Image (cartoon, rainbow, N blue to C red; front, side, top):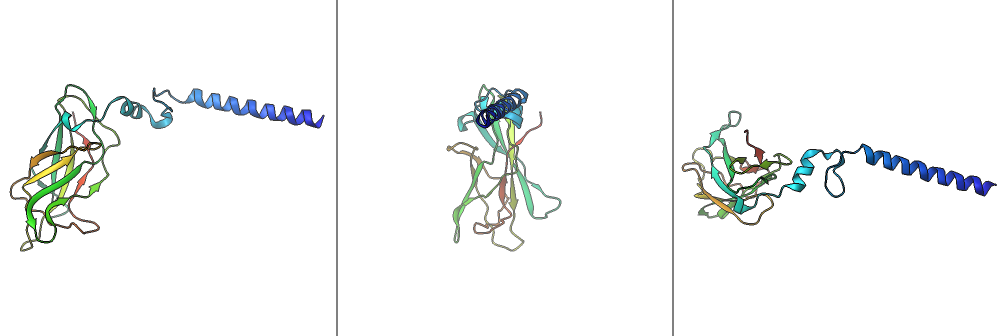
Length: 194
């Protein structure tokens, strides 16, 4: 009799677990993706359905530098990607950015900028529209060593091929290649307003 009651208890427990699993599955929204997105919501479904922008989909340009009001000597330079393809693609994350210029005696001719992952988690860019990241630049103090890049190479997130743009004339950069927290870095991509 004891064995029968134990067996009935085990079957009842399995039935309860099955019911909980079915109820849990029924209350989660369907995302159309393998594994289900659950609480991740529509953006996760869109990210799986929309391919990332490739380098071939994009053109890049640099905007006018603007000095930060709360940090004299530090400038923000807009780094804008335009979707030149005929389809919508996803552009999110932090782009790679290298500044190229004169051969610095200590650091060489290329400054590899550190990345600050502070952009949007996911972003769709319809054909003909843009998304931007910001390059924050610390300029040398007056009388300090001056290094002015001539061009910028950027690799869009998730890609391996670079795009090139001319660096704004007259905007020197303080080289801090070995610094732990340099004043020059690239920020994550943000959705541009419509």
